[in-house]
Amino acid sequence: AQSVTQLDSHVSVSEGTPVLLRCNYSSSYSPSLFWYVQHPNKGLQLLLKYTSAATLVKGINGFEAEFKKSETSFHLTKPSAHMSDAAEYFCVVSDKPGGGADGLTFGKGTHLIIQP
Amino acid sequence: DSGVTQTPKHLITATGQRVTLRCSPRSGDLSVYWYQQSLDQGLQFLIQYYNGEERAKGNILERFSAQQFPDLHSELNLSSLELGDSALYFCASSVEAGAFSYEQYFGPGTRLTVT
Image 1 (tube, each protein chain N blue to C red):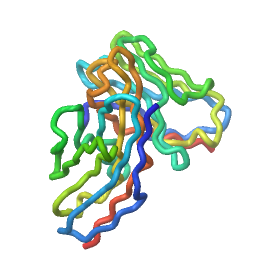
Image 2 (cartoon, rainbow over the protein chains, first blue to last red):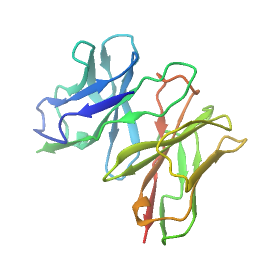
Image 3 (cartoon, rainbow over the protein chains, first blue to last red):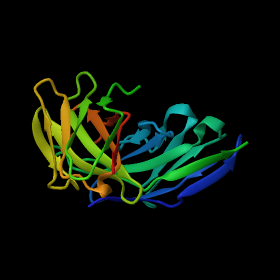
Image 4 (cartoon, one colour):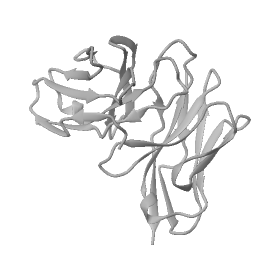
């Protein structure tokens, strides 16, 4: 079984300062991990994904995440926050072995607030 | 724009009624997934179809059903609606089933309000 824990329900940073959104996962297999962003009244947009290639993954809008197997973590970072980054962020895990099909397991989300 | 379309955007109905939500996947995607997002349960996977056949079931109630048509669009049918069914329903599509490392592209969602 797979699960994902987002350690902070809310994160508030000032514009121009670094962003860190924390995520820990549990998986029976080698997982695929994703970060999605949801802006208010919008659908979910994929930021980045890890699928057993490079452990440091670069995504859109300057975000990146590092897969750390020893820590079972996949934290999302950005060097400098922008007002447009204010949104809900979801860490997502999928570990269904190939050949089957399954949906994704979502964390409960982290609400990112950007202070001017 | 993800390329996944959902209609309607908003739906308001009464308890006990039945509604149908529609989803068109991205061009070329054979898999369609349905998710429910509510304040208390968060985002939950409901069901997946691949090329017209049911592939996986998540936390889908027996009052809910889905199907995928030959043109690959999908419909989610919700019946005997209860107040607790009020939620945002998302459809997502991906290239193929079983390729769990392939990303899913989400539609804008249908907001269902049951009164």
